[in-house]
Image 1 (cartoon, rainbow, N blue to C red):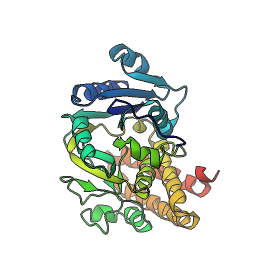
Image 2 (cartoon, rainbow, N blue to C red):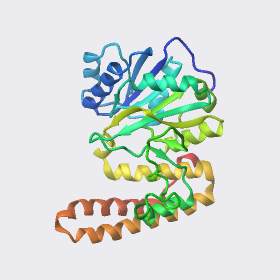
Image 3 (cartoon, rainbow, N blue to C red):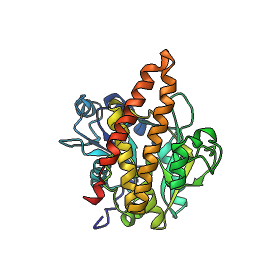
Image 4 (tube, helix red, strand yellow):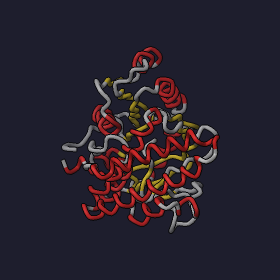
Length: 322
């Protein structure tokens, strides 16, 4: 970011990136409006060239919402940056289109972050639609944590901090806690911190931008904090599930980008080996599951995506090195 963003009278700028999630987008905007009472709010929707009528219905139902229409799918990071540049709030809230707010979420988050000036990013407690708690806090990647996930230690011993991998499956999500990383479904950000940290890295088209951004917040001395007093519902995977194999490979590409950016070429080579091991283990496990006729369709799909990833890995190139 070359210059400070403006700080005007609006308390919170909520920015939603949308791509073909019309119904969820309407629910998200509605929940922002109906669950926010104490703070002044502007809502900015950045649409990544949706073809499902999202833009038209948003204009019809919520004409006061600012709509920015991209001519192509620019990805998560770049689209959010466009929204951030157009925003004017003291705080910025990046909200996935498949999120619904609960019980004065923004009001509670603003009250808390106002009182804790060391916090640069705040994240709420996240529920799945069925009421189960979603794992939303992560630890920064290490070679050991990647290895634990590759050989399924994280599934065998999910309550162990040593073997749990990146996801904090041992955390009960019942207390305020400083964490390495918050997933990108919902971020409540102090503009002053953003001016120091900078915008999202647009080299990350989709995925791993959460690790990168949170690491940069910590590197600049700003805390990243989980705040369970504020709650949302996350209808996870609503956009990416439409292209599962592409989505699966993109996740791995983004992991390599993050690793190369923050750890260097030798560690990236090691991660590639671990990622290859990960896919081989998954193929073996899904082959066993394939024996059960009722599970064959799902198992075959997972085998295909692992094979696709194995074929992609040896020729993969990192966009950061272009």
